[in-house]
Image 1 (cartoon, helix red, strand yellow):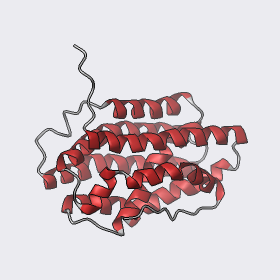
Image 2 (cartoon, rainbow, N blue to C red; image 1 turned 180 degrees about the horizontal axis):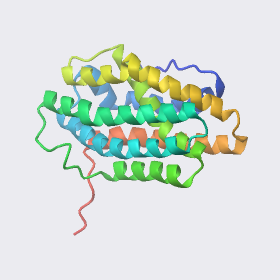
Image 3 (tube, helix red, strand yellow; image 1 turned 90 degrees about the vertical axis):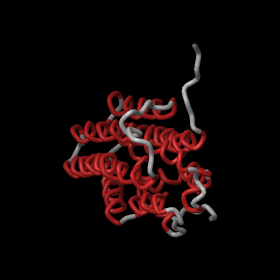
Amino acid sequence: MTATVEVRRAGWTGELWSAIEPIHLEILQHPFITGLTSGELAPEAFVRFLAQDTYYVNEYARSLAMLSATAPNMALTRSLLQHAAGAVTAESGLHAELVDMIDAPAGVLTEVLPTPTAAAYVDFVTARVHSGSFFEGLCAVLPCMWVYAEVGRHLVAAGSPHPTYQRWIDSYAGSDYLDEVERVLADVDVLARDVAEVERQRGVDIAIAATRYEWMFWDSAYRGEEWPTLV
């Protein structure tokens, strides 16, 4: 499947997508992602991904809730809270369903040691949310929700012969999730009009780094990344 991106947006998020699009194309070409539609992705790699995603989503939802409390308008407060609730639902519901479908070992989602990549990504997002401006924190969380939406939209066109992978694809290509992300993006465009150019550029830099972490996250699951044994 040729990796293509058909995202064309006006406003500041259109400029932002132009900056992160090259990384997104690399994500679409990664063997983890192409293995979802071919059905050739090793089940153990997908289980590793689900376990690390469970760890990440728990912290990601907290970051979204933190941002919602400091949002400059009610539209963003509502959008971020809704997305935080959706993230928790995915962690508690979708992940458990997928683990059952793929017949993973018991406790795989509850006994999670974060990989170096997952730990670093969480720390990166948390630091921007707690120490940066609201806009900087928003740019740190935005790539996760947006990249997943575009990955889902891309993969659903091809589908997957593997029912577990198809279920994952459908969840992120569904209208409920895509509409939720669109609401956040529209709110970001409104907010960006009143943000200074220097801060918008910092936001782009942060979003680029977060999108790189997205690639690294899938790559770490594919490779079976572990902490080095030093003693």
